[in-house]
Length: 226
Length: 242
Image: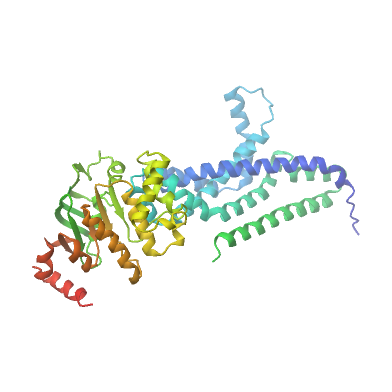
């Protein structure tokens, strides 16, 4: 019978916390960049300029049709080479965090753009007409009238996607980056207590994600009581 | 003020507008009526370029709407429009609704825009609701705010696209009263509406449309006393008896 031994957890907490910070930083910036770039993609996709809409459609379809792990590996293996030669960094500079962040942001933008596109389309066409009729340019109508309403409708979906993204950050372990999951794995491996550490890590992920999604549900009820 | 010459529009094979020609002089009030699907809303939306058209020409105050070189936003800022579904911006308060285009499009100062908005809100009898949001007002109230919002831009003319069709019957009159007052003050107006009482009271001319064509374009009295086309006679017979 396997005997559980949790004793290596308390000592590892500072290291795990450092890992958690990395996970949170990656999540936060991927959400931020993902929403900004995703909004741009969504507007391109809805644009009447064919080239823009094709580019956005191609981008979204490409990223949604490949596994996240693979995108992360591409960025982990290829991007540092590029950056080294392009920006003249000394070889061996640790670019794992930046390449992971870039990979996540570009990947998530594809998902965010679909959410945002649906959000933009949820705003009645008459609102655009009213903005135009008041003399607003297309950009003003988007910025002042459509996007604020679209984002208000989208908040729950955007937050849900952020929670999924937070879980997905664990995939950076492929680049041996010590995010929370990576840190837990390393400690467990070192102390020969992998099972305990992974159970513990799983519990932490569960508590965070479950409470966050409960929060989203409550928000949703508040803004869309129906 | 508004000149519409031989305007046609089609979606694929379906003709929405066929060879429409008319004009609206300064200070004139025109009512456009006709059965649904006759193209009257489309026609009025062509006037400020919300709907493109394939052939013909529309000139508003000397500016050609169909000309690709025309800055449509600039033109629309001078042409007020009121929609069937009000289209107030639901995420802004009433005062913000009234001020937003003044500040962002006309570049007026915030205080000036606010003053102007409140004055017009008072004029449509809704000053007490300044700080509410559109969702808190009745349909009739929202439509009056929408009229005030359009007037805040100091338009050279006003377009009304079935302004009372989405309203409960008891709210129709409060909106028509505001429109009647506007007409009596000499505003140039083009109104798509089925309110024949309104047409009889304030219109100078009535345009009757059917299947994308302007079938009648007459002085009000002529239109109501003896419309020339059979289609208009039938239409009037149907709606005037109720």
